[in-house]
Picture (cartoon, rainbow, N blue to C red):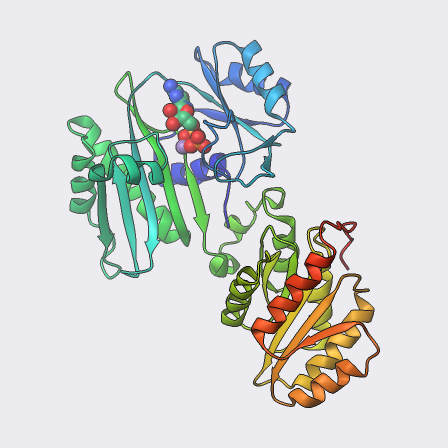
Length: 399
Ligand code: GDP
Ligand code: MN
């Protein structure tokens, strides 16, 4: 789960990370009021969306007076901000964060990630701050500093000092940088984060260290024990298809194509997406309905897939190991009626009781196209879609 910049800053501040004075605003009036309340001479008005690269997309506005703050807020609120990370539909801006703007002397990058290879928390830092880490990796790879934290002992002060040193901090800034690095690490560990990123961590013209931007992501599987983090969830920033799926306990990832997929098993689902692409089509989603493909679950899956207006054909691919194909086939027939399927439906069944399963589909009287192999299923699905492409259905309410 991702959270907003202002939320990450509030959390990190509790761990001793220095942040600028700021305030949240939902209207231009409130933004101008915040600027006066914060004081100072210049302000930044920052769109709160779950995406980086806001600066380049026009989501960060530097303002010299409260009038400019009002106008910046007026321009940003209600807009969908399209960034390099957001996808073409962008993210809706309905909260702003107003901060005092400082003149900057330096900007560095400080990130914490869960490294799957070493199975450790890893610090990734660079003296070349301000740019995105992908950009730094491309253009200034020699500036990247990495350090792995040993879980048995946690991050050690000497490690933090070494990183701070490599980032070019010395004198009184060194102590502040060490405190910031250790604070981020503790926040990461104590809050079950999967990512903490401060970019830029800046040195102001007056010589103060400040986290100007902050991003945090959390482990969804640990949210049950972090109620204060769960409450920070902003569903308006998520793909509505994925929110609906999560609410129904289905493993779903929204994609941009037209062929909706209902599959059991993540590996089989990925193989199916590959086969659809190989056959010249584009999948609309990844969906693993899991082992127990009961009629209720299959109906839920159909409803979810059909609620996406991109979907113009559905491919069901079930391998029944623990399950039975006749049971799955009955589920598909029931779901066909319950979910009022109105697009071509291709079903491939394999495994236990496959003949009985195919028999049920064949005798259902429904226009279901059946396939024997995965490759055939993908070709039939792409073929069915190509015969009638671009036929956008009405988005449906989901039950
Ligand atoms: P991002 O584009 O989504 O990563 O948003 P950031 O919060 O990082 O803002 C983009 C850029 O705006 C930063 O890299 C800074 O260079 C600049 N910026 C943000 N806050 C301030 C500030 O208080 N003073 C100055 N001078 N620049 C700022
Ligand atoms: Mn940033």
